[in-house]
Image 1 (cartoon, rainbow, N blue to C red):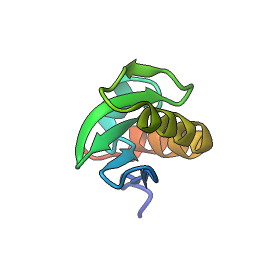
Image 2: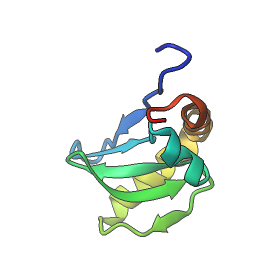
Image 3: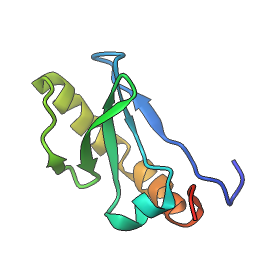
Image 4: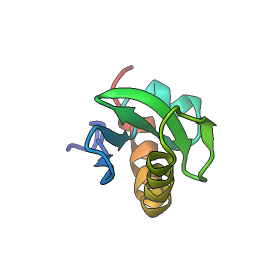
Length: 94
């Protein structure tokens, strides 16, 4: 990706291939809140967790899905923050 292009960061959960985590690519979205990423099911966002480990709202998913999302957030915290901060400046949108 070029410097002035958004970066994508996506991780599929091992407990269910229907779920993945992704970072926003739109600069307006990244400028509204602190670093976070989204829990998605079948491509639809269903939850949001901040890099410090707090959910914006608890998603309606099993405890194992929720735990894995929290573990992935801890594992990838610095990658999430790097991509999120890059997209604040160079993300999609105006």
